[in-house]
Image (cartoon, rainbow, N blue to C red; front, side, top):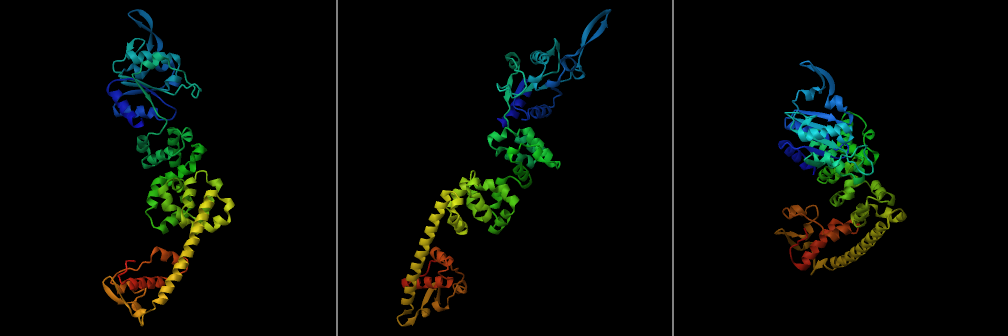
Length: 436
């Protein structure tokens, strides 16, 4: 609706229609009207209806006049109205106005006159009101149906900041502020009206303390951080493109970590990319039940991620009473899986050593004297090492297989032994290796 309001108001100006805007305090009703009137180049008059004197400010005060020998009372109108140059009038907070004002506005809206005296240049009369709910949230009077019916257009202004206005007024900072507001829980948004958001930016940019402007329930620290560092979503999008070292350096800064942690914990793609780089102490703290109310995705991710298990698994399992049962169960499964892999690796290593021993001689010749074909290069096995592999094979790189890497990580195999295993398989099969 917010995007369409500007179009609705412009249409009303172009077609001489009276508009009644209804919305909560601080949603920008007055700013919308001002922007619309000024864009149309109208000569307009603003009235704060709640503080108007019905006679002095609007209807006029009686003054004795004498004309052709006849003395009578006539109304002397305020200067702006007496000149009859006004093209548009806006009554702010009309349902806080004196009853005499509201009644006079009825005539003005319908006939463009007050007490029968017409205004030749007046085209439109607009007004803004606060809701008159049954709870009595606002100290306002209900407009009667006849008063409301005088306005052709009724606009309900939503209780949300207008991104166009904030961008125009505060630039990219205004856009970030509106995004920050949009990330708040609905119940918290009620405490941060668009006007409060505007005041917070004014305070921040003048060196003031936003904590004196925004309700504490709105996470003011996050607001300040967002204004200084940028939208957390955008920060995380940039962060995942960096190297692991750069990511870790960024997350080691506690201020940076606080700024992005909620986004990391709630966005699956950021969990996958960044969780393994979180500082260990911070991660362990956030996995505890007292901190896990909003971190369910983090717990689920860590519970199913063996890479993270390798760094914190021992601590979790030795202090299992301090962590959620789902995490404990997941890590127990990781431990069992790792133990099985280690047993399988040992068994496979033993079998491979048997093969190596059995193939240490082919016929009566040493295996090192055999030749293999790699990258179309015929090379003596005894000449190949990990260090000269790429040079002797004319640019081919040696890469271990995943099972071999697991054994290397477990300290059960060296890269040289992995190379020998590959060469042995090639001799057995009589083919060129594909284990690059």
